[in-house]
Length: 433
Image 1 (cartoon, rainbow, N blue to C red):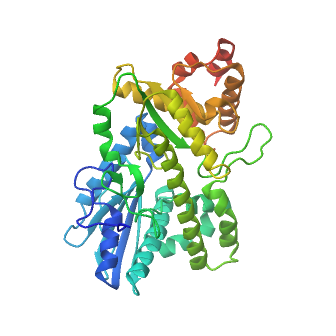
Image 2: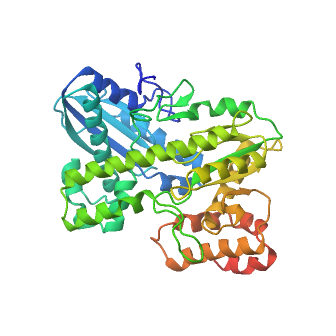
Image 3: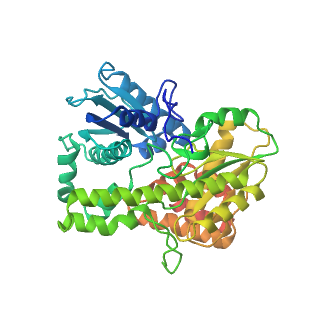
């Protein structure tokens, strides 16, 4: 069994050159011994960046470049920078004041910090760092969304949660932070060369360029995403629960937290344990997708809870999604957007695949086959079109601030493509949106 971290640290998958992987940096700190560590986390408003750019890959790239610029303005003599997901993690040995950082324009960030006392065995020190990273990341996310919060140390920031969030918002906060900075966790092998350090068994985003270079014009571009990973999917039209979401699982804890019926430290420990379990389930789900496409295709861990890559044909993609969803039945369910390459421009191919992925999102819970896989250029039948129209109409009626509103924003941006995929009788109602 290989170690969960290496040294020198591996490159943080998908980030600019020179960005070290957080898992390897934290692993080395745990190996080096006990003492005080000062830790800061900078997180990002990824969805806002994606919507502003109209391109998921461009939005993610902009966020990660902004984090790298932020790190370059921090005192590198004291602070060590490392990265994962959409976060920058800064560590300093000993008791240090919070870092002074400058944020560039174009990406909204939030940050928080704390000090961690490391003691016990290497495994215990590693767990202390992981738990601290989770809590500081949560405080950073809250400050990102609530810029009026002036406090920066994570403890006081989280102590104020009952005053500013309702139970559903608190559950979303507990669920919205990645807890994979050290890879697969105890009992699971570490990532092999070419795999994502945080997602062992999945090809790293850094290998995507080589996969694209060797693409066949007869193949397909694929992008996948877990439907409703935060709150789970309800079946339409009866509302029966099909999958459990991360936040749905944590709602009872959030309710106890806000009602003052539980010790916050104990609650955070339990939330962290549940998040680790869900991250492990996500890894298994994504690996089932990836393994089914191999060896004739390759899906990379380019997205937080999804994959992108190439497959030989639509049938292979459908088989992979069907198998992975059956394996994770009741827990999580992915959809996939697919488009044939046909020697077209890669940027256009990517846009088409992401459009088709959004089609699957409007159909989630419907039982329509396109809720699992939609191929760009394949018109929707009357029933699928009705479900998609109903989904978008309900978002429009709910107004600004409703969860999922970004799906309506996306549909309006790509209105002409929707009209190409809807049957003619549905055009008038769609245009009125």
